[in-house]
Image (cartoon, rainbow over all chains, first blue to last red):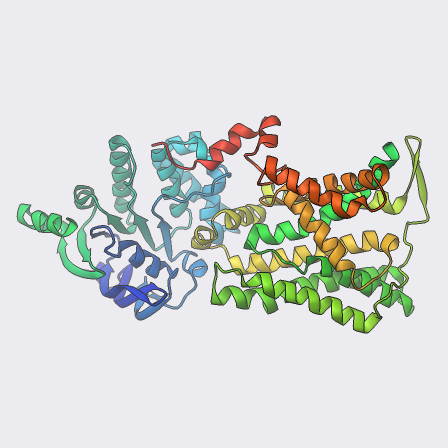
Amino acid sequence: MSEHASPALTVEGLSAGYGRFEVIHDITLSVAKGQAVALLGPNGAGKTTVLRAIMGMLRHRRGSVIVDGTDITAMPPHRVARGHVALVPEGRRLFLGQTVEDNLRLGGLHLRHDKERTEALLRSVFELFPVVERYRSRPVTAMSGGEQQMVAIGRMMMSAPSLMLLDEPSLGLAPLAIQGMADALGALRERGQSILLVEQRVDLALQVCDHVYVLSGGRIVRQSDAASVDAQGRELIDAYLG
Amino acid sequence: MLQVLLSGLATGAVYGLVAMAFAVVFYVTKVINFATGQLLMVSIMTVSGLSAIGVPVWLSIVAGIALSTGFGVAIYYGAVAPVLKVDRTGFGWLVSTLGVAIVLASVAAMIFGPTSRAFPALLYHHSIRLFGTSTTWQEMLAVIVAAVVLVAFEVFRTRTLFGKVGMAISGDPEMATAVGANATAYAVIAFAIGGLLAGVAGVLVGPITFANPYLGDTYGIAGFIALMIGGIDKPAAAMGGGVLLGVLSVVANTYINSQASDWFPFVVVVAVLLIAPHGLFASGNLFARWLGRGRRSAELALPAVRS
């Protein structure tokens, strides 16, 4: 139970949106250290908005975000990115026109003066994704979607974050690439990495995660341990996802 | 003909530096600083004014370039950042930087008077014979400085982590911020580099034009046209556009008539925009494809579709 004493992420009463339009209302959720948590929900439920709000890319209306004991509620995103939270956004958004290795090194920007740490992180990325090491000096645009997703996850690993956020990493990938990505997330969790995963594919979320939240209409409508989601619970989640 | 080409290169080098001043700012912030020409004027008027009251020439040059650099940063904080804060995707900067340009020219005219003043000759009276033609060292200096600036900037942009962060901000500012890049700091640096390049261009051209508070308009427009000819997506392309514009202007003056450089560049711009809407040296257009770089550019334009 000690791991629950200092959660990787505590979000309390978070509301945020764009302009005058509030998208997420009163979101409360937590990720224990070393846990993988899924945020499920249909299109337009506000899943991406939750991640953007945690990252500091949206101004919060109300609520607080605490990562590993540090209150990051009012922190600008470029400081949140320095070891607190890292993000694989929807569509990966790699830095096009730059090589695979450049993309990885840009992920570890705040550790640039710590050469040893940077090299060790780079090695751990290559260990997890050998194909990335093989293509390290190629432009990212020369890689397949699945390989690009590996680079995006690697870029996130390079900042050694307390918490990893992934926004629909399975979107647009071939089945084999999806399984590879799920295995990689499993491996990261094995290493004690805390993860918040936004997914539309319930099977994938249940395979990788310990706990699931269901978001609908900008509110958390259901939560459950992944292990206790039986066939009936699964049906209920599917109903929410439409 | 060689004489014309050489003279055009020198003029083009100055246009190119001003175009690069526009382009570096645009590259990082997607803002066009319409007061860029006036930053060139600030450096010219400062050098002229200081050297007139007996300050050593080298010191007034340093002060002139430092002042134009400082004004570049001041324009960001005073006229661009507040506008972007209200609406990040709006075009308010178009009016605010244009306003700064008018104010700078008017204030300079109030301080120095509306007529031209002396500018230190620097290397203008030292001529050099090159391939049977005669040119001045001042013009050669402009070409050399432009070449050094271009190479240094490209090496810095593509070979250092600092430059790669700049490329990342240019391509996807939000994602760059999400990996820890401080986009505001880069914007300030970009405006400073813009001021620096315009200031250097001023020192290079001052001995030829003398010091006039309305010079900013002439060089601002020329730099902007060079930017449009070369392409706005890469600072190096802007320099290419500047050199081409310089050569074409001198050619027009020599072979059409002495007023031709006033209208000829616009004809060139229209022609360029018809053939290559993104500029001659921009990635992914006809000209770039002729140079054999088209395939890579086409790949860049289609990110992440394969899986």
